[in-house]
Image 1 (cartoon, rainbow, N blue to C red):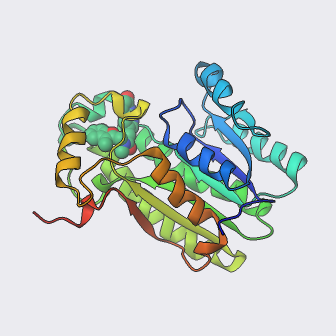
Image 2: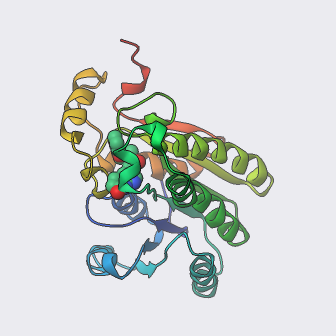
Length: 255
Ligand code: 0WE
């Protein structure tokens, strides 16, 4: 039923086996998509490449999404190799560590800029580069978090960036709809990834989340991957500009 054979999917944001991008890449691969998977830099290379070789036919590429020249180069290569693409997954976010430690009131101009450049602007840049290759229509998927809409302790400038990301999804969806390119966000519950590991009380947060959520458990990468596979497929042909929660239902609770 969910068949992505003949589709080319490009995934950004692989760091290690805990990455949400890895959960998504595995599911897209299982559904039959051909994959190109990107990691940020030399430091991420070895671990990313080891994982990518687990998916037969998947190719690895290096791309720092804050660098326009690297983005151009990656999409030129994709054009050469595949001619067209169908799916873009943006699973990238960063704020300087100090910004998540200090009071939100102390957010620096530079920390704000970096968080928005890497976590928000990169979706615009990647979408602009991907759209000309999505000649058969397409699906663009990004990752967001509940901290965009309600205050989550320590999330701070990332919450502001994710709010901007969710608005960006709507504006991109409006622009790209005429080309049958859909743009959606998945709001995942907290998951122990490399990006989350830096957070002191993530363990407490995960426990709290599992206690409060209707499904009384945490979110798994594979569950996010399943929703990404749905959004990538024709099953979601009428869905664009949305934020879909994959969080065991946590966000619906008021008390
Ligand atoms: O979006 C995220 C990760 C965001 C993130 C995390 C870090 C930590 C290390 C962005 N940049 C950095 N920079 C670093 O130097 N999540 C949804 C995971 C996450 O991050 C949190 C969370 C959750 C959940 C930060 C504080 C509180 C909760």
